[in-house]
Image (cartoon, rainbow over all chains, first blue to last red; front, side, top):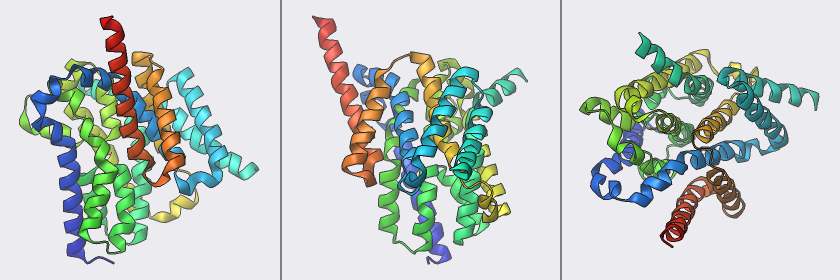
Length: 105
Length: 224
């Protein structure tokens, strides 16, 4: 186990690297802004990244044992949010559906 | 008052996803043995869900600083592109601008790309701050409640999958473009099959390359 000071230094390192990665485009501003292609890509990128992150959190190795059930719940979340647009309803019923399906299978 | 209502309305979907996820983080971190101040500081200063979850076992096992730095770099590498579409619409005030950049999580990136340029410039930092507050509040509640509650809601982590999916739907409704979905699914599944441990970063880089090639092709067709 790390000592208390090691833990605080580690948190400091994680903060500095994360902030630097997020802030890097600020220091490359002109070069990046002049790229028309980059701006075109950026219009589609948020959707692409959200799809990748959803898949990544769905397929995390520790979760693969109940992948079928989680996939069914995900379909339900997509359908319910598409129809009603209610975030709270979709998330809570998605989690509840997994619990019910696990109990009944 | 109308402005405040608007900020809360925009940040609400993320808050609904953040609360259970950060609750789970708070529980897991304190269960692993991290103190409340350390757990809270991670949510205040790092504010990056995947990294925070990954950091718990590293901190508890006494991982060296190079491992910590390398893990941070690999997990958060994707954040390097998040500020690019926002560069022209960042707040004028320096504190607001740097705070907004520092708070560019996956979810804030998605939300800020779905609001108007004017809203992003005027209230973008407040949206990030409210979302950050949800994250800190969830961590505090989770760390205070303890891990026992996970026995009652074992699949609470599914909130994050649902949140990413909901943000994808919101993005899709804005542009109605199918190709980013197809590219995202194809690159992630290919990366997951070939090298599952680094599937996330590989698929993001592959997607950018693929989109770049496709935009080249469409530019050439337009030129003809």
